[in-house]
Image (cartoon, rainbow, N blue to C red; front, side, top):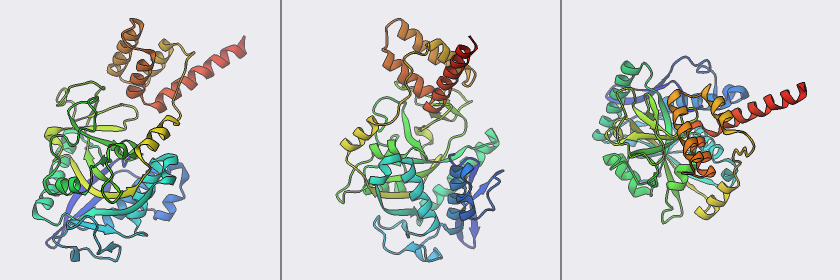
Length: 362
């Protein structure tokens, strides 16, 4: 769902480097955007493919705005130099906007996208960062076979921070958006989970919030639990951290890699409800609950789907609960963070179906 098998290359057209994307093993890469959007069975995957293809065809890293061909780039730039504003109707603009609004769920109806800009990479240093990203991506490919490059959201404090990031890179692991609950590193959120980045963003003087849509080299991921003080990969086997192995929403890029493994490519500027309204919205979201399902049954079901290390964490938390070191609510939250809601719900449904079947057999 999240731009799987997408690679970033730097090609050259004369003296102008070009950002391009290759898709590995995708069956929809040659379809038109309209054809892809009609394929409901693989809608989100197709949307990703379309965005990558459109981005590739229309994006050029240049020394000046005049080097970008086509009429889909608006001269007026609300973010200043170094950014190209995409016009409404541009395929990349519309796909990013749709992806963002869909990711907000019902809150999307009350969110208005004002502008989407592309990082023009107009300075020598910016072009060097593109090439650096490519070098590390290829190095990761050689080491892991798959560099695991994905798109991810980063919430900003406003235009000033965006300009600082584009000009100088991320600093000190970014803003303290982990609220002390996660390891030391840059926190980004999967392309289908913009809500958390929205909450970590700040409203500027124009009443707008701004998110960066970045390409991220994840490599091999490891589980990092809340409260961890981890600041580096636990071993050479891992490259980045995630909040869940089965359905990660949060990506943790260690500080030493945040300016080589993260490339900020787009900025989306929008108006959204106040934080109070966001909190109220979150409280209405459906949460998995199973007051009657035995926890050992949950662990048994998850053990068939998660690696032993994750099950060991869950078993430890269950023991802590039995010893009254943590509450049941804390236990459920930790299991949700490790397993992910989708996987947890599937295990609960499976348990209910087996129980229902056993009753019918009696």
